[in-house]
Image 1: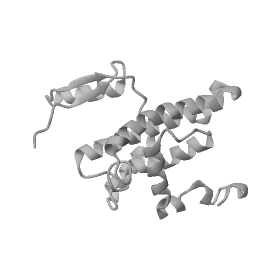
Image 2: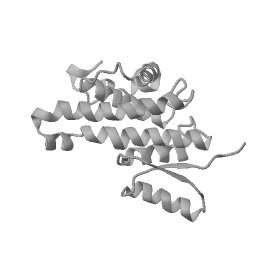
Image 3: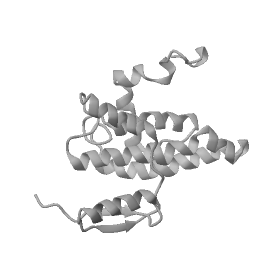
Image 4: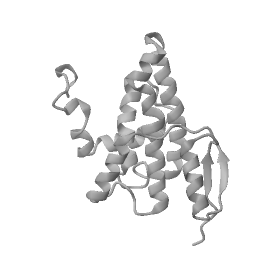
Amino acid sequence: MQVGKPILYSYFRSSCSWRVRIALALKGIDYETMPISLIKDGGQQLAIIEYLEETRPTPRLLPQDPKKRASVRTISDLIAGGIQPLQNLSVLKQVGQENQLTWAQNAITSGFSALEQILQSTAGRYCVGDEVSMADLCLVPQVANAERFKVDLTPYPTISRINKTLLALEAFQVSHPCRQPDTPAELRA
């Protein structure tokens, strides 16, 4: 099987792209650059999930196939670093009470438009193929945020389908916020 020249979706000023460019150069890998406007990378929750994956490898949350594993990480980073942080309370406070709903809706719809496009080429039953992955763990809470901020999910049929499938799984049901010990009584399931 012949592997084509890799494409680096890059923004010149992005430190994330810079790191990848350094790695490609060190390894002597020829690549093409596709300029885009990048979204900032994710936080420590992904590092924790990856730690769990390394120390407790079953069930697998990162596929063995390197291309699928890269897709899982791309989707996870898009959600955890590019969509979700824009709805954090500290950010919403900065935009002002009267602009919070519109701000959050715009952040989510922009991110979901990009995500829907990616999922159209990676999805099977779940975000990447037919096994639950780290990307799926990122998707479900973000869809819940979208619902909380009254985002119309109609333009995102792949996201909606995957979310519905995941919510039927026991792990997603027992971990849902409405079933946690510290959930206020009025929000419990």
